[in-house]
Length: 136
Image (cartoon, rainbow, N blue to C red; front, side, top):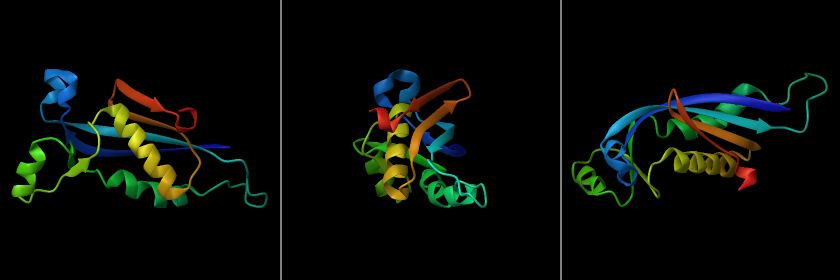
């Protein structure tokens, strides 16, 4: 049985490695779709897993980034934001859609133990990446 759940978060970032346009501070509404594969269905209820149980585990991971500036830990802005005591999320990678999808997938797998089969992350309405953690 496959179950899909959709989430979103709003965040600013910059990716100095991706050219002038993406190197400037800007924001996105990130749309995240998680697909889970379960091998069973509860015989009496017909339910594999309650959607709310998935949300209870996954949503805090997604919402951790909501309304924050996402910066690579080596970005010079980190020092300025730290000095101003301005909150942001420091990442151990450059904040591309691809890196963010892999990061979120690994967090979901490691922190929830849910059988994540695929994650899709869209930065815009016309552009998304898909990551299959089991196919690495």
